[in-house]
Structures are given as C-alpha cells and as structure tokens.
Length: 125
Image 1: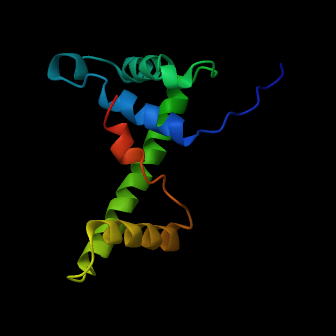
Image 2: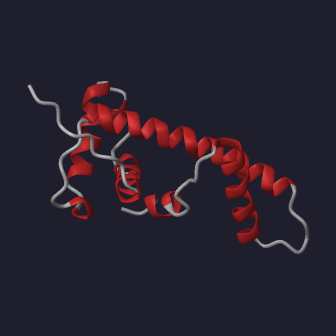
C-alpha cells in the first residue's frame, strides 16, 4: 500500500483549527458525556466543513488533536514571552512595541516564529 504524501499545516489551517476548537461545544451536558474520540471527530467535522479549506484533503481527528496540542504548547510559550516583554516595558512603549518584543523573545528562546495573527483571527469563526 502506497503511503500518501504528508500535507503541511498552513497558517490558514491553524486559524480554522483554532476556530473549530473554540466553536465546538464543551458544555456540561455534551462535554462530560462525550468520549475523547467523538469530541475530536466533531472538531474535525467543523474544520473540514470550513469554506476557507474548500478543495483541501480532509484531516483525521488524531491529526487535528496533535496539531491542536502543538499550537496550544506554542501559545503557552508565547504567553511567557509576552509576560517577559511586558515586565521590561518602558513608559514610552506602546502595546505594539511589547508585542514585537515578545516575538523577538519567543524567537530567541525557541528558534521559531509564531503566526502573529493566529490568536486574534482564531477567535472569530
């Protein structure tokens, strides 16, 4: 059996995955009674239905889960970089200056760039 070529995650994929996770019900009735697999299947269904990904190959629930955890880990690390930048704030620095410094700190610590709009864009469906 021939293995499929791996499809890389794009910033658009990440934004849609974040939106899918945010918009999938986690309320007490559904959230506590649903099994892990069913929860990620619902997120994947929401993800695959996005018009932003029309024509793209469908993702598997496990792939979405793994990517979500990677995004979440990077987000937590970026929050730490942002807090470090905020502690070094001078009176003449704007919020944008702090954000730029946080990106520099993050890159210096992890040798990766984080998609600057993912958190903001991901908050809306």
